[in-house]
Amino acid sequence: MSEAKKARKRCAIYTRKSTEDGLEQDFNSLDAQREASAAYILSQASEGWEAVSELYDDGGWSGGSMKRPALKQLLNDVTAGKVDIIVVYKVDRLTRALADFAKIVEILDENKASFVSVTQSFNTTTSMGRLTLNVLLSFAQFEREVTGERIRDKVAASKKKGMWMGGPVPLGYRVEDRKLLFERSEVESVRYIFNRYIELKSVPKLVNDLAAKDFRTRKRVMSSGRVLGGVHIGTGALTLMLQNPIYVGKIRHRGELYDGEHGPIVPQELFDRVQSIFSDNRRDKTLGKKSRNPSLLTGMITDPDGRPMSRTQSKKQSRTYRYYSTRFKPLEDKTSAWHLPAGDVEQIIIKAVANHLSRGLIWESEDRTLNEDRIDQYRKTAKSLPCLSIVEQRKFLLKCRAKVQVEAKAVKISLNLKEHPDPINISVDAELISKGSELRLAVAPDNGPAKQEPDPILMRLIAQAFAARDYLIDGTTSLLISEYSQRHLRNLARLSFLAPDIITAIVRGSQPVNLTGRRLLRAGKLPLDWAGQRTLLGFE
Image 1: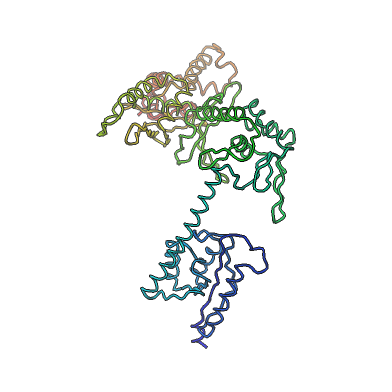
Image 2: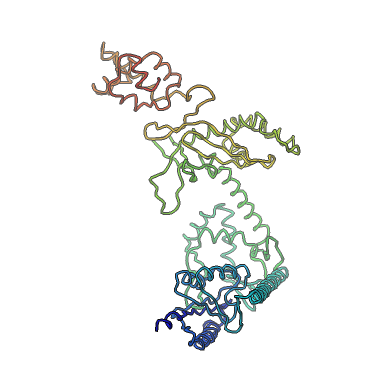
């Protein structure tokens, strides 16, 4: 009994058919393959072979790829030790690609498993057996490739003749004898859609317009009885429809257009006007022309964690604040978002790119074939870059294929010019600092501490400090402090005793980058000695 148990071989039957034709029959090709394989396993019962109950059927899957659900499950079961022998009707049922077969054999060898072809006898333990198997698989792969080429050539030749080669029937047409004919009840709807798009010049607006008129897609009943369509047309489907040359009597194949056998629904002039609007909208969207507040770096910038950022904005009273914020994937944790003021980042990028390109040092290269006229053009544009509109600046950065990576202590820019052999990398020292509830970028020059524009909040605090001191000493009131409480006035007044060099640094904007209005106002007991103040506030 122990020896019989050791000799037990668990056999899995694998069946495959390239198309779904005939699979609905009571006894189809997969059943025939399984029956023959089961009979072969039964004939080997004396050797301990027995079939597993699991079915591994790939109906409608090509043998040219390993991306087949049943095959994946089978190989997983082999790896898990559930299968000892794979039984197939013919070896080309398992695969038609020589490279894929090598991968399958490797998996079988690693797990001490094997495979058997019912109608073909192989002994893969000998070199001659492996050669015979490889030759047979080579012919199977050759047959598959030749069949594919023949089908592709037939489709190409048919489309060049203007024949419709199947697929979803376009709105406005019906199919008879494999030819497209007008569906009279839908022709006017198609023409309305094209004409209405010219008026609205926007696919989303056209979607809303059609939904308001309760326009719905054509219903289709599948062979399984499932009903598709009958819904309001969406943005994607409408875009494809408006760009489909079939409506002007053309057939598209691999980027080329051929005169079709069917008649046009819309005139060529109308179709061309629609494509022109699409082209203008794409260009305007790329350059940000349609935005009231265009964003310079959308699609180019990533946050310190390497995630893409997009433009966001908030509005306080009548003022709009622009930011670049982390763009998250669906279901991604949004608690780690970065929000950077757009103005700070854009100013750094434009200044760095303009300085770097206008100097001309990047053009020094062993490649002497660089076009001098193009180089001069880049230099001239770079010099005037800070003075251009944000749309023109974005156009220039897109031409340079710019990428921006914001880091905690630097902003890194990569330019990829066609005229330059290598990527151009620019790094700007810029420290992320917290100012109140938002992050700011403070740029550090080549020499000296970080430099920024005078902080308006710090400037206002200093002015209020002297006004509060005057009020507490002699009762002089000011609009700056007229509504403040006594406690807040005392907190303000102590700031008037800051060292003169500290106040001067605040006025000039050369204070430490982490000295914010909140930190200054909430600094515990401010020392009266100036040295202590410098130490507390980070000046030393």
